Length: 193
Image 1 (cartoon, rainbow, N blue to C red):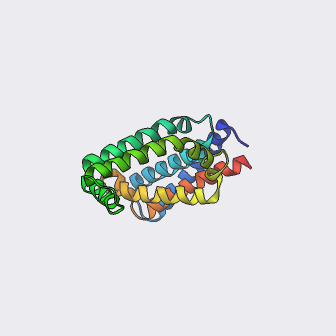
Image 2: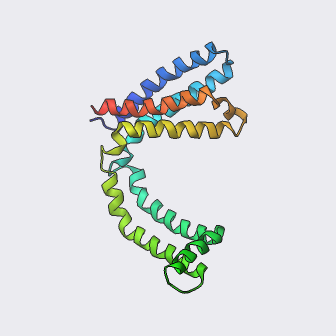
Image 3: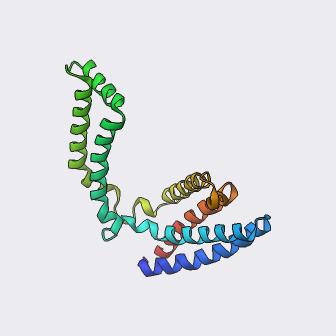
């Protein structure tokens, strides 16, 4: 059961090793020195960050402490965003309520459903969040390793599509970063054993 410093040190050691190996791998594949340095730095950095990621479920972690506020802002922002940017969706929701026998303007009914749903979510969301994020729960599991790797793969491919210096993360280099993200979580799990 490692503490923050143990996880960070293990992540830094594994990240440095991975960066060196990946740097040479990219060079061996015919990549230039610039590409090799950028990809190696990305792999090393992602691995270090991912080695700390599973403890976001710890009661004392800053992300966990901020999750309640962020969740509330997200719910309120979602209701406002739907009403402003997707009024047709709100009216569609209200139209569904009309089919259940409730009379009124579809837009008004749709907003009403969103507000009632938001209030219910805000009232019960904290307890649900706490029960889903017990320490050493989901974030300390192999499915979380896969989720982090897949998320990193999608993120690197999206960043690569922006072009410029980020373009080096397209294709195989993005897979290397995704592998580093998954490996970082595995490093964390190994320290906790």
